[in-house]
Length: 183
Image (cartoon, rainbow, N blue to C red):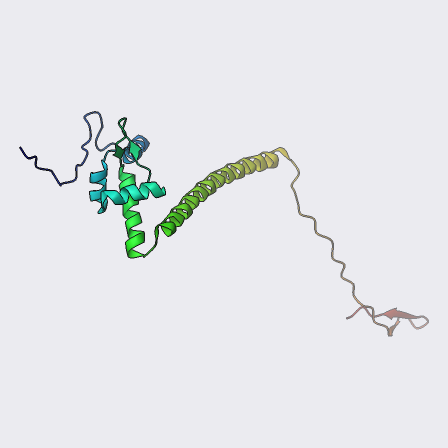
């Protein structure tokens, strides 16, 4: 008796314990965990990615992909693994990269992700420190009763004195010489 092989990819339906259509952080965590869980055997993953199963074994040997293993040692590929396989195929076929180039691209993408995560953490920390400083500044402002005025050095306006004397008669008997203060 010959068995007819189903060539259609198998898709995993949600189990009865999984809620469909949940929102919020728990749904995102569940979705992320589901995307990382190995559910496809090598033949199905190869078909989903449009590759030969032997190509997946080569990529695994090169360290480009790391499928999970069942208790009996069967390779199990997740949705993330299939997306990574498609990305490898895009880089090699459309962009003409070799596998060493693909490895470097993945290393650089991982480094970018690490740096972006660090940047987000530093931005959160800076925002917390800024809020703390603003609160402390406001506390100090309220605690002081004297207004803080910025110090400015006084400007001395020096007017040059005219060298020629001016004669003014006060009465007929006295003559007074004064200097004109005009500029």
